[in-house]
Image 1 (tube, rainbow, N blue to C red):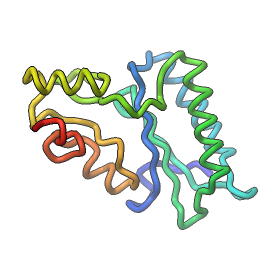
Image 2: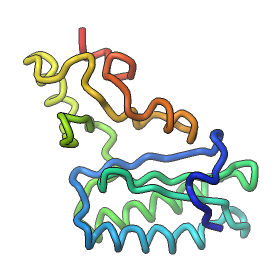
Image 3: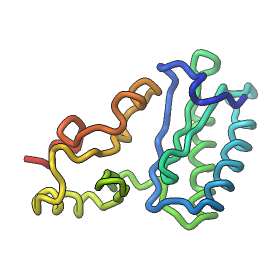
Length: 161
């Protein structure tokens, strides 16, 4: 069952997929429809998950479930990864590579390899106050509070030394 993201509790489990580029408006509409369709059929052991999603900045896909309603299992998580892989193929994008960093440069959203990010830190193109996307958050509450944070307050801080 698909619900509005805002209607999920703060302890809802989330998965964040960052895209290597922004989706076009046309692609975004299609991703929205495909995700809605996937979530409507997303199940665990024959029972529907209470799920929601968001597409912030036209380049992230956030999937969320209320685990009090029905917890995810290995099979349901595998199904979501297969869905993400199908999006990668359909739109020729990268959503699963966790070795990249997404951060703000003014109003622009930058996407760099970890190596490039480290070089930018060294070259002072990225500062401790640069807003980074902490895709390691696992609950809706963490997402709302600690997803967009200064690099000095995230796992990225290890590169600032």
